[in-house]
Amino acid sequence: MSEPLLVVDNLEVTFPGRTQAIRAVRNASFTLGRERLGIVGESGSGKSTTGRALLGLVPRPGIVTAKTMSYEGKDLLHCSERDGQSLRGRRMSMVMQDPKYSLNPVKTVGRQIGETCRLHLRTGRRETEQRTLAMLEAVQIRDPERVFHLFPHQLSGGMGQRVMIAMMLIAEPDLLIADEPTSALDVTVQNEVLRILDDLVRDRGMGLILISHNLTVVSSFCDRVLIMYGGRIVEECAARDLQNARHPYTRALVAATPSLDNPRAELATVIRDPEWLK
Amino acid sequence: MITVAGLSVIFSSGRGSIHAVRDVSFEVATGETFGIVGESGSGKSTVLKAIAGLVPSSSSALEVDGRPAAGRRSRADRRMLQFVFQDPYASLHPRQTVDDILREPLEIHRVPGIDEKVTKAIADVGLLPIHRFRYPHQLSGGQRQRVAIARALILNPPILLLDEPTSALDVSVQAEILNLLAKLRQSYSFTSILVSHDLAVVAHLCNRIAIMQAGRLVEIITAADLRSGTVTAEYTRKLIAASRGFTRLNV
Image (cartoon, rainbow over all chains, first blue to last red; front, side, top):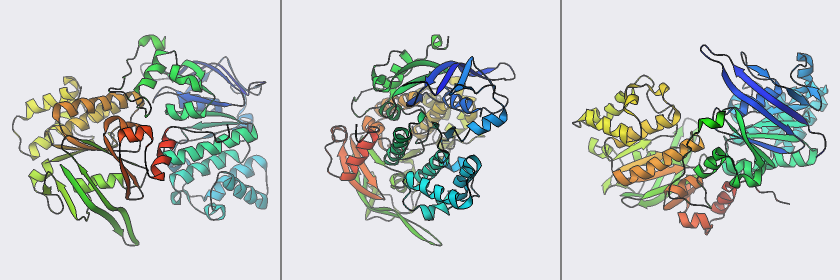
């Protein structure tokens, strides 16, 4: 792995509150090459906020600071809105969790995907349509011509998720952030969607950040994993070593997950240590 | 304890009808925890609702504790079983305190000693006395699911129906709720049916497991079969492989 695609050093995201500020992400540092990086954690651990901060999508009044946050050497923190827009969607993009809420309900699938393409690649009408159909085929939608004219409410969960992936990939970004892309899906469909992402990472040399709460998915799919707890990255390890993690929180999470291979009479519960947040 | 034979559920609307459950048969013995797994739309929750009488169904036999459960049910019939739903954010009344929520089933069934029963139920599910007069929005997801379990158990029902009781929860909270259910199963000695899409969760709590696909029962296997992969149906094999995680084909 040569130059890292993404360098993040000391990322902090803070939401000011009435009595005290909430530090959603605390001192997070990591780099990403052309690889599959997983971020796992439970609700409120700051994993989605980290993904959003990278794209400059932290909602107001959240404050994002960092020592370094750069993408291929470009500073993401201090770039102008215009530069940000040329990166966002074109060079790096994000697949959101739930197709029910993240697709525009009053636009057809074809128009939504085509919009990204027209905006970023400045393609004409005919070419936009061709690319959109090709992209729908690339995410293994069986009948692209038909799906092109459907509205989001006419899609199943798995199809909706594929449409979102198609929309994010049509501008051929180098970095894809997938925020719980498979959580709303059945296990069999989940693996099909992961396979599509996997092929794209391999064929296009993309960098992928997979944000998930599912340890099984992350450990079987990613190369490297960051474990977040209370806004902090408590551990970084190779995905296949997740079972032998060192940090007590990671170990507790692994032990709390019911497993088909290691039946336990009683599941371990996580006893939270305030030390982990120091 | 529960006998289901030839159960079918058809939902019809103006434009046509959907055969949600087709010809499903199984039996659950007293004290057993029976599991049903399947993907979305496989009809697993509908089977549970049919047993509880929440959806109209047709069957050659549907018996709860030896009494026919099809058709109109008496109050005593309804007291036989209680339901715990998936989403603790949606299944508790937002304007009722925990006390109101737990009191209601006792008042409906005219059970004496309400106060002590509520106190006991709160302690049994691992909540504290201070939680008694809180509203659901003041509780965490895990605490709400504990309230839902307490509400189901407060009448001491012989049968508990669990519809994805941990799917909306974080892994660490799921572990707490699964441990709680295992513990309560001992102390309350109820028969239960657990519906889930998560094979590992079902294998953790159940001995016998029914696999459902597209409204049909594919097969009934034991948890040991599930763990070792000794199954006959191709679909079950596929489901087990998928739930073990992602596999790269050419690496």
